[in-house]
Length: 137
Ligand code: HEM
Ligand code: HEM
Image (tube, rainbow, N blue to C red):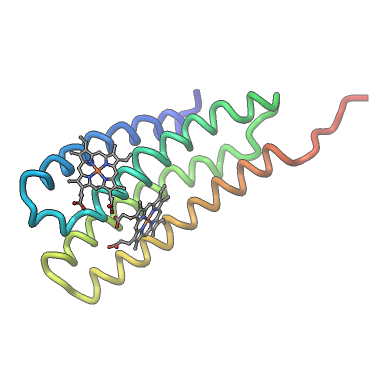
């Protein structure tokens, strides 16, 4: 298994742990519902998407009997997606408790970078699955 693939799977499980603790805290303390976005995106972009990236990168090329189009794109996606997700959620939280233009700006920029990483996966996977493979003569 490639390092970045393992990285996606490990980080997805870490996000599940963190989001579950936050979910329980939100149940117990209603004022923490202000962080619902943090909980839902730890789950949806962290746990769910990263598990799908990891399993998808490992399995989908093998189903097609092909090599992944670009390991480099996968590696870049791994680092960018994690840094941007953590930055987006940390600065969203800071902006909830101490609203400031700079926190909001960093949250939005991180969100845009996170969305960009979605398209890195989209591109890498489609190039893997749809490009024609030269048949040996
Ligand atoms: C034991 C684990 C969990 C606990 C205790 C928990 C708790 C909560 C709580 C208290 C809320 C706020 C509900 C409200 O608005 O009143 C919430 C929202 C949400 N949770 Fe969880 N959660 C857990 C696991 C998960 C998982 C595994 C996922 C996704 C895979 C998830 C996805 C969401 C989403 C998307 C929302 C926002 C829903 C909405 O806007 O109505 N949660 N959760
Ligand atoms: C770069 C990627 C993403 C960004 C920037 C983003 C941003 C947002 C924003 C701004 C909201 C509204 C929050 C609010 O009402 O306060 C939201 C809600 C939501 N998003 Fe996303 N989202 C992203 C990806 C995703 C993905 C991939 C999923 C599912 C797989 C998802 C599921 C949800 C759900 C269930 C809600 C409603 C629950 C909530 O209010 O927290 N999002 N998202």
